[in-house]
Image 1 (cartoon, one colour):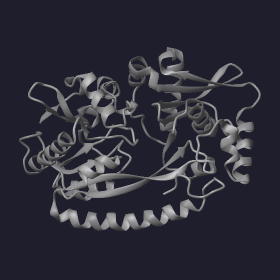
Image 2: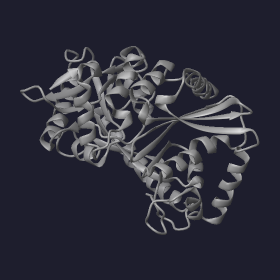
Image 3: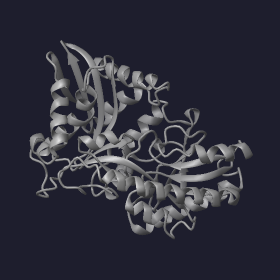
Image 4: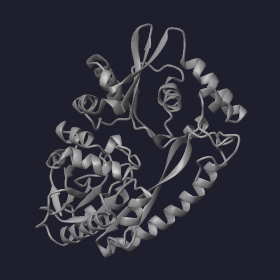
Length: 400
């Protein structure tokens, strides 16, 4: 097993081939070599920003890449979306030099395979290699230059859960669950994909259907033009306007943007066929923009912003345009991301995302396991409550 301190040390074609093999033959946009390279090359995810790359690989004797994993040495808890501040604060009070290791895609809370492998044997070997790295780095600073305290693997597929939460790692990981909201391109009445947006509306209960139509009328005011622009066709002016909107959203929440303009430019250039920009203009002047990644099976809502607050435009650019696009393209799922029960009124339903967590220090392990157990009970109750508020005529379509 090797540790790579840049994704650039790994062959692009081989990495992407493993992504496809572990993702049903589909190249996941956020796990592409080009995406991870843009994060590093733009300076968005580097050791200086708290994301030190430690990607793991296993090669055959002939040099072929058999298994790989996106891995980072963290110096803070920003940008993870399964926040562990409650864990980090007491642990840092005891040992401020101790840092976590994170298996995830920086700033990108989407479902994606993390233990990439060509064969089941290679997958198990990589999971065990991760366990050995964790043990060694938790006991000594020699391997990574610092002593680590925890391992976190986020937004795991079922296959990854079997590898990282089962016996393969021998790490005795604990699992943590969070809720996201996803839309499924499947009519609960017929079991078939939707033919158009109107058919989707007809599958909703009357109140939700009426509200969505009213919101779309308000959003599409006189003089408003909405354009969908594929990444390879985005010009510099459109990209700079999007970044202005993106940055303003963070500033309105008293935060700083994680990603820089160079990152977005790079992925539009290198993987533009999996990037979608939606821009709204009023009387010829751009006023809002939203940003998506997509494959043939999933659409990922990522970012949004505006320079003028117009009625219901957020819903139009973030949800209704996305659902229309997914229906037109025959895309099965639209991942609307975390937070916001308001998404359920627009046809998205709750889905449970699972992460794996290993705590090396026994003094913290039991309290954290107890915390996760209580949290899981609250989450289960929350899921039941949410399932009673589905927008669809028939409950249970895509719910927990």
